[in-house]
Image 1 (cartoon, helix red, strand yellow):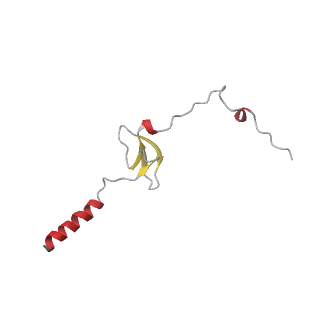
Image 2 (cartoon, helix red, strand yellow):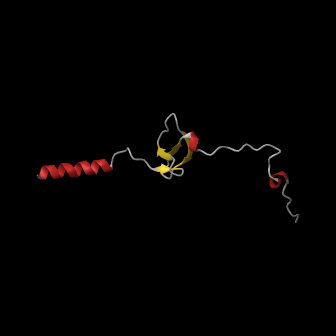
Image 3 (cartoon, rainbow, N blue to C red):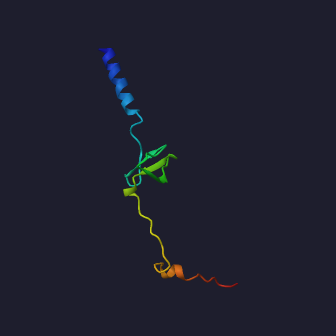
Length: 83
């Protein structure tokens, strides 16, 4: 009976320490890993210095700025007061 309880306790402990569960990142769409799979891309870094691997469909799309679509604030130059 003691051996059975010891075995169950060891199995319970080992199930908590398996590397299968990884930390989630990027709004729970990514996973922190040492290396991303072929179907994933690196978007940011996790707090544990691992890569946040996210599938491309969950990554935000880049907005390409053209000269006609820039906001007025970006078109004008800032003038500094002279001293």
